[in-house]
Length: 543
Image 1 (cartoon, rainbow, N blue to C red):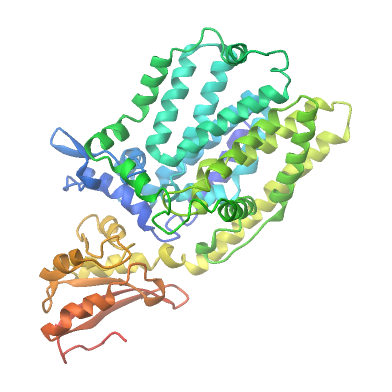
Image 2 (cartoon, one colour):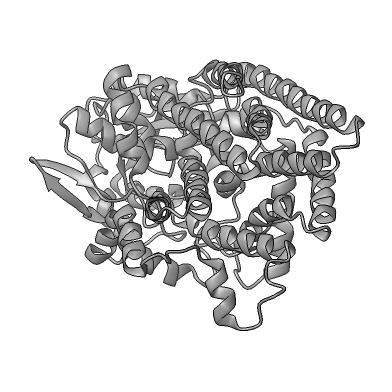
């Protein structure tokens, strides 16, 4: 009966996730991972990251999409794009399907942990209308939300191994850990976090009190028969073999870690432990309250999930004191990931927490089940728990509805603006020659939206300061009408190449002419297209 009750919750999630599916606008990171899938389906040349690929049947199969992001989404989206066409709806349908699978895995893990199916239903109910889960699922490629599904699946597999002693579940868990690492390197945070949760569960449950020798403790940790280390390593390697092969070919992951170990690419000081931790704790609170989806068009916060999280954490601590530590073990998974996340090779982005976005709901459901089990004589408790669940779920649903209303008005802001659709359509109709992307966030989106008919060349380079390489790459386009140039609006610039562009074309008696500009729905400029023309002939010079 509990499983049947999942259906309405899955329908609620699907309705909220599919509603106005093309909004916000296609983000560069979404497009970047899916462009190779589009190229494979359209039999177009595939440009693999760092040229690391396998050639199978004459097709180039990329190994990764970044030094620390694999091609799981690239290949996972293929059947959806093949059936639904090369579209934003097609790629987001794939991401929403991953969200549905995640909900089913959350139900399974929570029910297995508590041996109480209603707890699994409660966890799914807390997620079905949650604004973070809904919007991060529909843009799951952008946040690599597939790591959440893989993480829950791995935890469930190893839980089944622990309880059933069947070695096949050990191998399944190790394989999924490998797949998670391949999907995104930060998945590594979850592995020690799950181990910490397990150890806390055993310690707080009093299971170590009778052990004195370390060998006895380790022996008690592992079920019989003990797993073969070589088989576990093989299963893990099978899960992440493309990442291993990528680094054999390029060493890219190790280069990225080495270059960003002290200060990250985006300037994060990884030695600033306390400031970084404070930032991550603020992000955790924003994750719980839903107050981080600014790019939808507004920011709405719901304090009830945050209050529920604090109350249940206190309850979990109390239960652990009485040797009922299951809830605390789940909270520990969240806490350890937050602690690990203060070190990054990129930036302290809240989107990194897509890895654990489902774990607060699991923690609340598990702790609620433990309270119900531990205090059966308290007749008011089931009513209080059910009322709390309904309040949090309904208030989250209202917040999600408000976000959808804001999105309908804004179309998305900044990098998420639906102005990208107007720009891609204009280029598809008007760009007859080379198209040059002068900043980040342009090329991949245009390539995908035009199905490869327009393939902008990125010339800005990914260095914060311009290098001589920029001069060499852009040289062939410095002639009247030789290309059209894509720009971000002044307030949106990331890699500013405008001054250096002028330094190169002005000695050639050229000037820029604005051909088109594209705006957010509120009238704010976001993208622009220019062309070089002889001095004195521009109809609309940039200011």
